[in-house]
Structures are given as structure tokens and as C-alpha cells.
Amino acid sequence: MEPIDQDLEESELELPSEPMKLNMGPAHPAMHGTVRIVLELSGETVNKADVQIGYLHRGFEKMCERGTWTQCFPYIDRLNYVSPMLNNNGFAMAVEKLLGIKVPERCEYYRVILGELARICDHLTCNGASAMELGAFTPFLWFIKGRDLLWDIFEEETGARLTHSFGRVGGMAKPPTIHFKDHVRTALKTVLKLVGEGESLILKNRIFLDRLEGVGRITPELALSYAWTGPCLRSTGVAYDVRKAYPYSVYDRFDFDVPVGTTGDNYDRFMVRLEEIRQSARIVEQALEQMPDDGPINVDDPRIVLPPKEEVYTTIEATIQHFKIVMEGIKVPAGECYSYSEGGNGELGFYLVSDGSGTPYRVRIRPPSFIITSALHHMIEGGMIADIIPTFGSINMIGGECDH
Amino acid sequence: MSKALIELVKKQFGSSVLGSHSQFGDDTVVIEAKRWVEVHRFLRDNPAAQMTMLVDLCAVDYPDREPRFELVTHLMSIPKKHRLRVKTLVGDHAGEGAEVGTLVELWGAANWFERETWDMMGITFLGHPDLRRILTYPEFEGHPLRKDYPANRTQPLVPYREGPDVLDKLAPFGFDEGMPFGRQTHLTQRPSLAEDPYGTYRPRPGRVRA
Image (cartoon, rainbow over the protein chains, first blue to last red):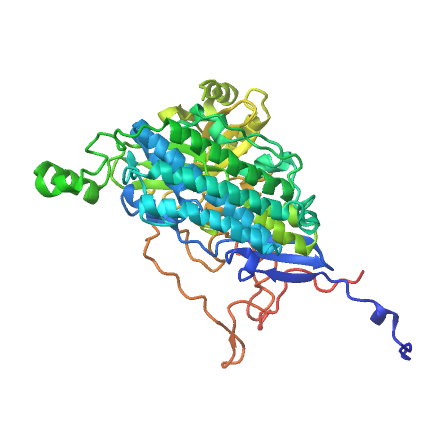
């Protein structure tokens, strides 16, 4: 190629060094449709990132102040819509703390089993989706197949595959079905087999590992300063799990391990989640052994739990009970409490304020995704633009929870 | 949970502690707003407290009270395995003057929590580096979680801006404004229509040559 025969001024020869701005999302396929990252790029390196959320804000805290305590459950379901059962359990526990009641043992086990199955679903979705975003489509199908088997159980138990609204203050909506234990045992075996197969498809793949190892690193100090919890915090080596540190429900009766990572990169987050699937399966197996086959599922208190339907139609007492709970709501004593449990992404906290009426005065959720996303810019700044995809995938940001 | 923490705060801050309780086993101290940052710094750095984590920060609105807002933080210590709730009271009846120092320099998590509290409740955090709305959009009017904000209120459409020519219909914000890092609504002034008729104002200096 001949040189361009032109006299150019010195200043014109210089390439502009102004950093380029790029809008990633909210319609980007890897941004889950709800996050926008404004990037300042120099070449392919991210100089500065501004994570903007709120695209799925539905004012859930405001809506909760309009109904009764029980009417919050459908909203709670839609926070972390990948593991709604854990949200249900967390909220029910919080209201029960205000009421000062303890649910029957059978209910505790039922909640633990359904909750751990929901956690497996959550981790399967996160790992499957983040693998798919890197081009590994087969493991995604394997993991989602496993999730579907678990959703079949949820459908059998609750009637809904995704948003169950199955928790109740003082118990559950329904007792377990007759074949509950057999179904869970069968499904769990298949799910673990699928997880093993899916994992063997990618964990020896050089391309996949190169995208994960050493990418999106975060130090334990920074993670703690940002109040990270859950698998993302454990991947940095801090062994904090609410189920171990502050055992709630019946978690102190199970033998399980808390997997931790070492470097806090994407690979560690991926592996911590995979291992937690196995640990959750261990908990479920032990809980199935210990769970009583009969006994009440709800507390015996007519002010809290709805009477059986046949009694509502036949006796005046049950009719009045039913009317009072449905129209006025459960009367929760005035006060405030903060209750926390281990959700799919970390400590799921509820700060409830009651004024003694049947309507919550303030329902505040502490969403783990929100806090994890708030430190996302630390992980992507200085890295390559292509590394945003695995990093964002591995923190498992759930729009409903993050945006309230 | 331990009562010792409440005693520790009371001993250090004395008359600034307005009250304390342990309802439902959650230890709580209520402190004066002007010592908000100081108390949190003490709780983070004191070897007996070692609050490594700012678990949550939120506000509760009591429109009939004065001060109107309760600002609540939940702190946790991983090494000591204890928790504490710290509260303070800010704002008058109209919700004005709700100001408190920022905790951003103590915990990174405070950044988004405070932005959320500003957005939802309208409490200003003095010294916050980037106090803009987070869950709603910059043109949003009011603060939705206040009790006097009706739940069924609809927000006005973000209007077109008018240019100098009557037929001009300009987008709600300039072509560059949707992107920059500081699409600020708080404490910053956008240029007036006369100064910037087509909305081409850029908050950052333009082209820089190396």
C-alpha cells in the first residue's frame, strides 16, 4: 500500500483519545433485562462503570403496607423469583417472630425441605445461565432439566411451578402430599446425576475455565465492607452462612458443610454454588429421614390460622374466624423486629414494623442481590468488556429482589 | 445477642443515647442524629464491638411524630457474632430538614443503601459522593415510601422540552444525558433554556487530547 501523499498537520495525525461511552443493557441479553451498565471504555478495557438498576421497581414495600400480613406472600414470592419458597419461609419466620409463636416440628421440616429444593433450583439456574452466556449451551439444558424435575415436585405440593405463595404465618397452606418423600428422593437422585454430568461437560474445558479463573476477583475485605453474604461472600473465603452462624428453624440438627472459595473470582463462585447443591441435597436427605409422617402442620391458634374449609361452611365459630382473618388480618402485636434467613443469594432479612393492626406498618426487605450488585463496578472496572458477562452472570443478580 | 453492646454505647456516648430496648431479642439503641457517623465509627472500630458489616440501612416514616423519620441501621459482627440495631430521628412534620451524615466512608454498602433511602424517603445524606435516585428515575416527583405519598398516585409523563422555535419538540433529555455518570437531580443545576436551548450541555469536559 502506498503512503498517503498528503501534508497533515501534527494535531490531525493524533488519534482522538477520548474514552468511548457504551450503554450495556437494559435490553442486553446477558443483563437479564433489568440492569443497565454505563461503561467508559478505552479500547476494550473498562475504565469506569456505572451500574443502574430500578427497571423492575414495583414498589413492593409500599404495596405491602396496603393489605394484611397474609396478603404480602404473593409479593414476597416475586422478589427472588428463582427461589420463591425461601422468600416465603423468611417472611413467615419474621412475622412469627413478631407474634412470638413457633410452628410445629413437621412444618419446620417441610419448610426446610422445600427451601433447600428451592436453593438447588436457584443455584442450578445461576450456574446454568452463566455457563450458557459463555456459549456452553448443553450444561444449561442439563441443569434446567434438573430444575424442572424439582419444579414438578413444587407443582405437586403447591399447585404452582414458580410463584407458589405457599407459606402462611404459623404454618403452610397445605400439609405434604402422601408421596412427598418418595417423589423428593427419586427426583433428587436424578438431579444430582444431572449435575454431575453437566459439570463434567464444562469443568475440563479450557475455554470455559479461562473465562472464569482470575476474572471478576474481589477481596474479602471489600466484600465485607459491601455487606456481601451468601455464596458470593463464601467464594472469597469467609465462611459465613446464616444456617451455621445463627441456626434458625431446625438447621442445627443437620450435618452439612459450608463450602468456601479462596480467591473470590468467577470460578470460585461457580464451584461454591455447585458444592452447595450437593450440601443442600444432603440436608434434604437428612430432613426426609427425620421428618414426622403425621402431626399438625399449622399452629393451633384460631387468631392466626384459617379454619378448615368444611368447618367454615358448617359452623358459626369457624365462619367468624375465617371472616376476621380474611377481612381484618392477623393482629400482630406492635413492635419491630429484624429476622434473617439464608436465601438463595445470601442473608435475606426482613425488618418489620407493626402498629398492632392487621396491616403491616412497614415491611423492609434486605435484598442480598441489591447489595451484591452495588459492588459490581469494583469487579468489572479495569477488566475487559467481555469479562462483564461471566462476572455479572456469577453474582446471580435477580431483578425482582434487587429492584424491590 | 448481648446487652453488653448497649451498655458499651451508653458508656461512650452518655447523654447522646436517647433510648434503648431489646424487643424480640433485637438489641436497639436510639442516638442523636448529630452523632450518627461518630457512633457508627466507634462501633466499627472498637475491639469489643467490631461491627464488620452494615447489614441494612432503611427509614421508617411516622408522619404524626416530630422528628418524623426513624433512620435504622442493622450492624453485625462476624468475628464476635453479635448484632445491633442503631436508630436516630430526623426531619420535621413536613419532612424538611431530614439530614444526617453519610456512612459511605465506613462501609461501601452504605452507598446504595443511602441512595435508596434518599430516593424512597427523601432523607439527605450529607457528604454522600453520588446521591441520585436509584430505583426510580430522575424526573420522579416525591418520595414514594413516605406515608403521605398515595399508593395510587400516578406520575406525570416526562414532558418534551420546548426549543426556541415553536415547532421544536425536543426529547425529555439531551442526546448525551441518558448516558453520563452524573445525570444528577440532586444539588446540581442544569443549564437554563437560554443558555442551552437544544439540550447539548455535557457535564464532563469535552474532547481531551493526550
